[in-house]
Image (cartoon, rainbow over all chains, first blue to last red; front, side, top):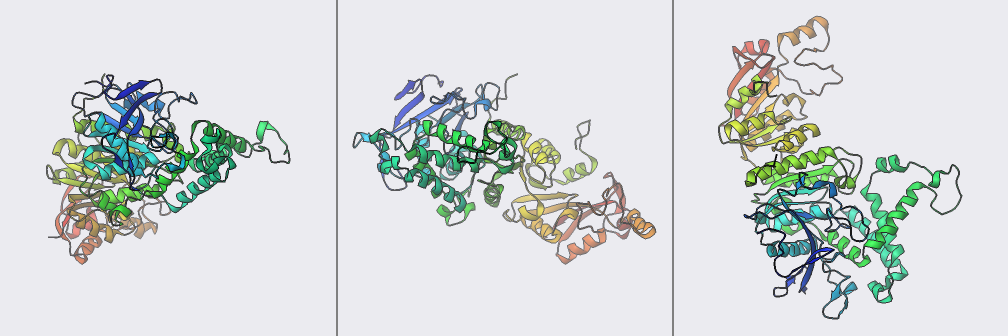
Length: 391
Length: 206
């Protein structure tokens, strides 16, 4: 079978692929509520081989989506890992079948607070059940079932995507041949919960939020969500990266202060721009639900407080990557995962990439990072019996 | 380091020869993974590595090895007991903060340990200190006192004494020249302490 013949129940759309899952078998969420059906928006690249052994699941971060290597349908910007996906590239579409789906609770086609609640025929809004990272993975697993794949060759993702990778490896270890958790953690830290709470409160404090029913009033909490994004965006960068980019330069290359509260410094107008463009492509309720899912994530807590228990008996090959200037998911978090994997004598590689670009380094051009991923994938492919690259 | 003819550096070759085919090996301070890679190809070894430098780890992972960035002092304690057949520590013991704990951990997680280190009792080192009154800087120990990563130098006698104190069995001792060539003197005898520039020891807890 090849990937360009969509299995039944799947529809093609200019926005990518969509499939309805769980109509007969509801998906039971951690909060106890059952969801049925669940629509999943996703993209695939490359072809599934006859043995169905070359699939790579890419898990996206908090505000990313399934458009890994396609222009974004709203902003028109290139996919968030555009340069890594394609023939002969790191994620070689001549060799691998790549899948990326919009997470549960997202706002790019997968069931979430923006979509219609079949029970009321209105948008879910705050009636949408509170979800967890494990719930997102349950939905991804249904999609992987639907695509007829038993075991994924690799599950890869950064930040919240990395949390999903770890969740896959602990809840469905036999379905993951190799795993690449990047710039992530086995639990969300108090500081990160705090940052998320600042963002949520900014949204909720916006009068246009209207208890999450803003869509009924044909409005959205633009200012609140923009402030949330501005605050979060700072945590994705680093002090040296911000300084290199903007320094204390004034807006419009002026050389004197305006003595007011307009965007005086370049860094301010940059953040304002980040905030306002984000609002155009992201749903405020989704932001609340997804940040909350990250807050709940704590793998050790689900395994008697011992992280290594979560990985006991694992046969998955791991490649853990962190970035030296990442203060949102600092290296110490990755080390905790590596130590837990060592404690169960798992097959693990780990590298801290020297970079001053902060958390966002995993989305940027970091040659050492890409060389590491490529080497790891290559050796995993050889172990899995996948053919070597052409040429 | 792989030589141009595809063979290993002499001292690494010596270590490689001591590793059993098909065994599980942890190489602590594995550099770019040269030894692990050789062991994987020629001895079907299931190898893991620990390396401090990003460049080393990156090069090792890029050639398909399972290597983590870390060091002997902080990363050995996590491994379960008996996880490996052999744990290797080549030319690194003198750079660890707690050599005693490192040795204990190596013999906890491995059935046996292979350790090599520069011998501070070598006559040239003694001469430098005795005649010039200066900290020795030799080709084997090419650092000034203020920039050396080597913080816990020992002589071969010191090392053997520590092994006795820890109740560790020295299964084999080999005296080496600077380039890793095997000397004919007994690696555990008194001449080794004077004439060996490096010592290589196979340890166990039998």
